[in-house]
Image (cartoon, rainbow, N blue to C red; front, side, top):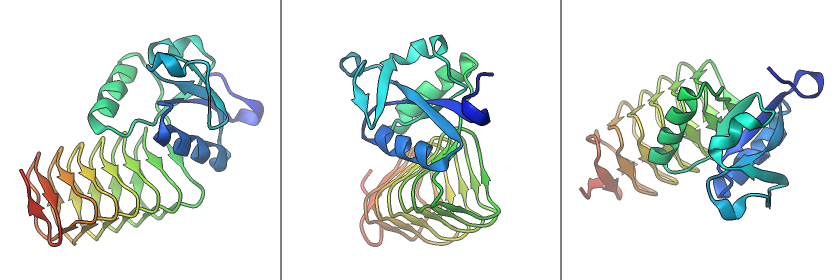
Amino acid sequence: MRRGIEGVLKIAIIGAGGHGKVVADAVRADGKHELVGFFDDDGQLIGRNVAGAQVLDRIAAWRSYPVDGLILAIGNNRIRQDVMLRLVAENARLASVIHPSAIVSGAVVENGTVLMAGVVVNIEANIGKNVILNTGAIVEHDCVVGAHVHIAPGSCLAGGVTIGEGAFIGMGSRILPEVHVGAWSIVGAGAVVVRDVPDGATVVGIPARRLR
């Protein structure tokens, strides 16, 4: 394993879009990683400077560069899942990044997950692999957040909420205690979810109602 100065892990970010910029900021803030650069399959980005780091190459080329681990910064849950599975099959090490302003209290956070600035995760919550907890999101006690979920900025999960794999929880939404949100479902921005959401459903509004 290659390491940077004083044992700091050399990390590259997968995805050089807007979310990648925010992840880069978290990497620099946490003090545990040295940011080597980005990988992105948009050929027009290769060689460019993004948030103070270079876009090095396409994703498939990651093994040709001196990196200890990779962080996924792809907002689309399906694409992020696909890329993660491909990287795992290539024996990539997926890193997690927790912004120093985030609060994690007695919770489990699995590999490949990113916690942005101002996130709160309370006791005995369980955050799965490849999850995005975006700026200011709150995950209360005893919640379970499945793999590949994206909790958008300013959202709040009350105690005992379960979020199924791949679900998207829109900006500023609220999920009431003990509610289950199904796999690959979508909760619209600002929604207040008061009852369970089926797998694959889209809900919006206050209280949240199903669109499809």
